[in-house]
Length: 565
Image (tube, rainbow, N blue to C red; front, side, top):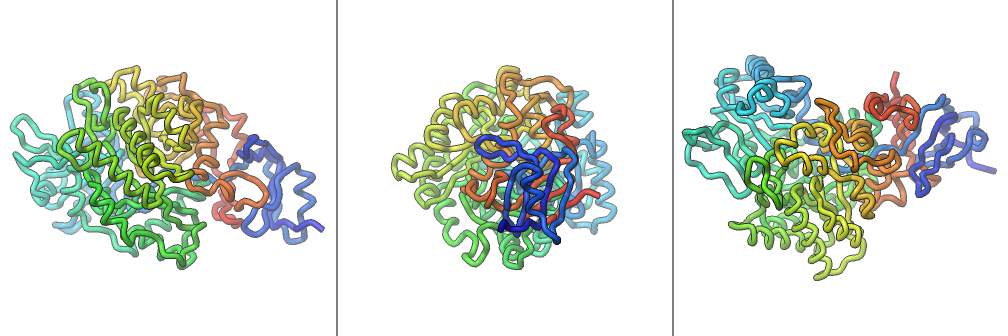
């Protein structure tokens, strides 16, 4: 006698994302596992008196979405009520941001900090009208003369501070930026309030850190919001001592502690994989060696809810800031640089290789933030060198972002079973801006998903929230269309991919990155019952309309955790 299902979904399109990309009609769930997948007739036969049956009416069922690079704790902490929302389209100008800061100052006791995240210079009206116009400390001084203000841009790699914050941080005329950092100044060599990469730390470390209780509340809020997006798994890409001076400390060890407390209490309703962050931007091999000791998740925490699987390292900056390390100059000059310890590129490359070696030999997977082609080549060569010196089967190291990954590096990544984690929604967001930064040819190539897939690399796609919102449908649409947010201009049509490739990047490939493809990431009997039901037929939807497809139901571990009313 066959087992009785507790939940059956019939009458739809079940995109299993298995090895054959099988399309079924129905799926049955018992406990926290998928009981069966098949035709309506087969699945209805598994119903019993207590079975909940849902008629999909042609809607699409997918595996629970796995956002493989999402700063969950930080995303929660950078949303109201914890911080100002100063991103597009909520704000469209420097004047809008100043107004938001002014309102916050009126409600915040003098002397306390005002923080926010999300502004993008490419969408601020004053900067669009006058390319020479930049956000300036004086814009914020007038709005909050009695408060220190720290506003992180959408990328997390640039901070806009007012004069009071700069004063508290000791940033004044003549101050030298740390290695891998940039302090913008005016013609009189006075800091403008714009700090890039490692230079942000001087201000960020002064922002009062959230308590563990606040972090737990932020994580709960984030997970609930992710359920409404159909997301059941995500990677926290960097928690540890190296994160105390990034995004207001949201990446610090206290956030890892908050996750542990939630998991122990049975209150973590998501599958969270963690990369440890032992070294900050501009960090060293010594940081990695010293800070890995004792950093992790206790053995009594369920590994299918919270698991440390790797180590994150920052290799360079980001192309919009002209801080990604490139082989050829940016349109405005300069090639960027590595953001690790060292007084010249040769020493920095050696330091980066040693950071990779230490984590590799300690048995960790490595996820390395790297964007410029020259930096990516250095990282991939470091992966290979670490493996040659200390062979480890199936280490699954990967490059994070990989904006301008070269054909040679793609070949090496594929040969070793290494991966790349790309950000199609960021491509959609900044495509119109990048022509002026790197030129049209390189701009079109940025995030070459098709090239990576055809090279045999398991491509993952992610939101990098809070850098973009975790609407994975926007990412899928961006991979199918390669169109830009502002104008709809096609950027690199040769890098478009099929729906199957795009969906694998958010499901089974992401599960593989977690070393978990044997038990999650596709809809197959015996795997965990993590499901996402879309409010429409995905395969019949115009790619332009995919981002607006609603999430009707999310099932996590066999339980309905979100249902659209």
